Image (cartoon, rainbow, N blue to C red):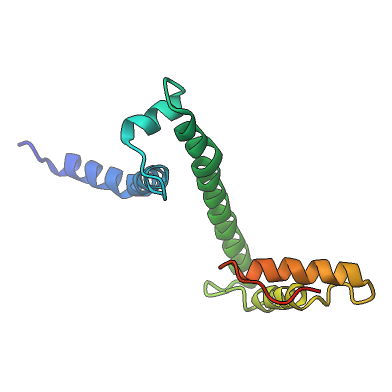
Length: 147
């Protein structure tokens, strides 16, 4: 009998444990292949291995896409650890950032940067904080009146 119960259960358990790394590898490959510049599979493989790749493909892969991928992985892992720590701290599986006021603190900090109240006594520091908040919030290129 080709499909014995023990063999089938082993394959089922193996697939149950390996789907997360498989999805992670698919997402990493998608991150390398998708972008504003269309790159072919051989170009990406050559840039990753360092063999006979054009200069712009090498720069796109190693200066933009791989750092973006690593940053996304680290941010996701740190958010997962922070969420697990918060759930452990409060012994509540539904704990979220609103419990400690983290979300409100983030909004307050954005408001402080946006309105230039960072250092009210120093006009130059206030102006720099205002411009920083202005650049962060006006990502479409538009600007608000400067100091």
